[in-house]
Image 1: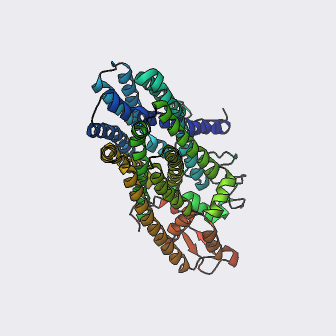
Image 2: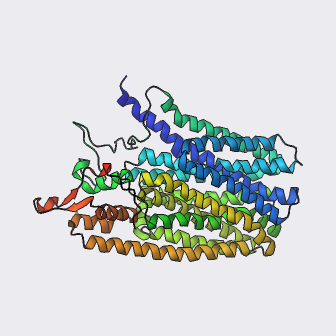
Image 3: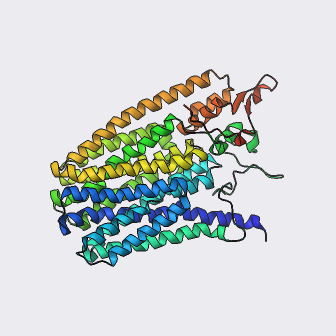
Length: 503
């Protein structure tokens, strides 16, 4: 059998599982409880706000546990977490409508389906050999999550109104089974006798690979060079993922940003259903429709801006990175305050803005962290980002209903204020990092081609180039090369593992 002919199909199968199917089902599973959980506990069970907050916090805590497990065993955490979530939905289905304990515990167990960190690890392993592919696939993966969220919100409220909590739990169970099947789809190539290694260089959609050209082959490079080994800048960018470099303070600042971004959307998901019910006296179908509209608005807007080539070009022209991300964070701060307005049309506008800016910020944040973090560091940093994010969700889930009981608009005001303050601090951190990188390059006597590339490229690529220069992976010539070959790339740097934390 000619394995070279079957490899693209194998890779395509795994890509569909990790980039499209798994994130879609994950998004649907984990968002369904937000439509009914708070409302059901408050109005069907008559629980006070303190207990409601605690139980929603427990749901979010279950998401944290799975994210932590993903640091050590992403595959096992993915399978076990999804299976536990399925068991939770089945427990709800098999319980009587007045059995508070089983329904609450079952819904909390659904939170164990928080498997995004594991999926991001798969994508990092599959596409880490090409920075262009890695950035794009991380964005597509999160877009698939948003589509799943929209799907869950669109049907979840209607199902709850017409079929009750059993109907929603059945919907969730179907999504959980589908998630497990997509995981088996991903694992299937490894079960055969001709399995494809996880860390093998990914097959590009355009038909070329990012692996070094073999005899008689020519690699296609983003820089236009016919041979990757003749393009040190491209090689430095694409090989950075396997460099073994540790995390630095920018990486950790982005880690904290996951938590800050989670505060606003966490308050929105924990409070908005009951806010719309009590303040505007709307049904669960309307709530699901509004959340679905917000998710759809965010999904469509983000996909139009961040995924098509023309959208990316326009964004880099008018809002170059990292300005686009900071603008999205600022938009979140403003939108949540608009959503706090107790006028229904204004609240709807604020909700749409909030979910739109949140989706854009989350997509860009995932892309940025994934691209500037080596695979070795990302195995910890990636899941930790989700741990921080879900920990923020725990805090908002516990405090949101309590704040709502004090003053309905208070959760929105708190969220907007915290997000605004952190956005200012993050802007200062990024400006400081950019200045340090520029100063270092100015004193490195590098070829003009490096400086030209650095000045015209994205923030993530500037960060990678700066770190490679700092570690001596891109060096000036000692005087023997001609003027057109001043830039030198150390070919053995991939084998040099740098584990220390760099500042």
